[in-house]
Structure formats: C-alpha cells, structure tokens
Image (cartoon, rainbow, N blue to C red; front, top):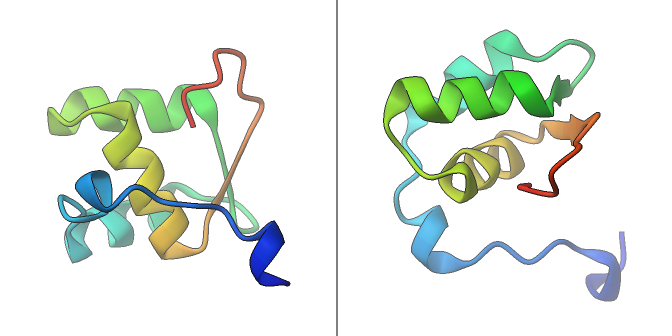
Length: 72
C-alpha cells in the first residue's frame, strides 16, 4: 500500500489503544473484518470513544465494514 493510500490514525486515539483491546477485536473479527455495530458495541462496553475502538481495529489489522454512521 502506498503512503498516500494509508489510513491516518490520530495519535490521540491511538495512544489509548491497549493490547487487550486489539486481542478482543481480533477475536470478534471474521476473516479480518468486523461489522460497525459489533465495534460500536465493543466501544460502549469498554467505555471508550468510537474513535479509540476504530484505532484499535486499525492497529490490529481488522477492517470495519457495513458502517452506516461513518464512525470508523
């Protein structure tokens, strides 16, 4: 992937990502993907902003799909 196509992750959100979050997201992912509703629920259960959950998914190499609200 070229640098111009890489997704930017805001360091404010990335700094809040933990290894446990990334592991939990990988567990919930199917074929390297997670749905938007599942990731939103994860963020709410963890008490973190949607942007933090999105940064955790990015760091874990998990793609978000079926996103209706554009949170991620």
